[in-house]
Length: 243
Image 1 (cartoon, rainbow, N blue to C red):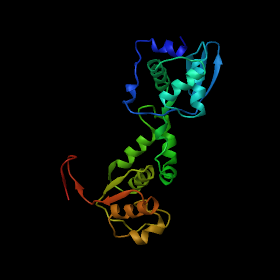
Image 2: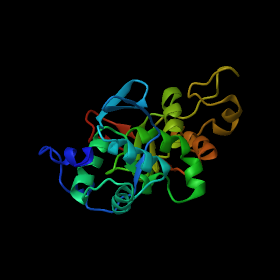
Image 3: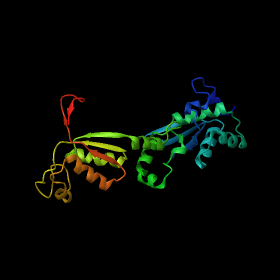
Image 4: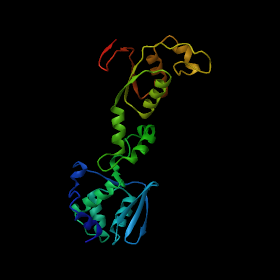
């Protein structure tokens, strides 16, 4: 029995692919490096942490090498491994992939992007960031889609709040409701503004509600995020308010 098969004999591991939600996945290996040390592989995904895999017969290294070449479905992996002399069944392979998944080494490669070149370019940094948390159950794209569906209520869009609005819009939050009763005041000098408004925006924003002014600035920089200014007064509790 290969080391992948030995892994499956551990009763604490799942014995089928339903641990991935029962949906088809394309197993992809994250950007990592490894070296052999005796009967073990030392795998480094992050400089702060290394993973040690028992690999007496080289089957675990073969699996990593196959996945490094290109993502594979579990069914195709069985065929590739068999062609290279590693005989495991679907149950054993699922258990072996579960070990790699728990170590953070693999992910669902069907969700590396958003299936749209423009959206992929827009969310390139987010997709790269969420690669730290993606696995066979949660793809990078699933995190970004959740953000794009999110609706955030921002209380206050003054100097600090307006900067947060820009950050939320930059992350790709789908909808923003901005809550602020104040009007934009003329800046005391060309170097600063009471609402964090750049000097060039002050003449156009003066006298307008802060929420509306902030929405305008945010829309100019990140047009894909919807926003609605909502001036209102909040009273004692989070549910008690008057318009």
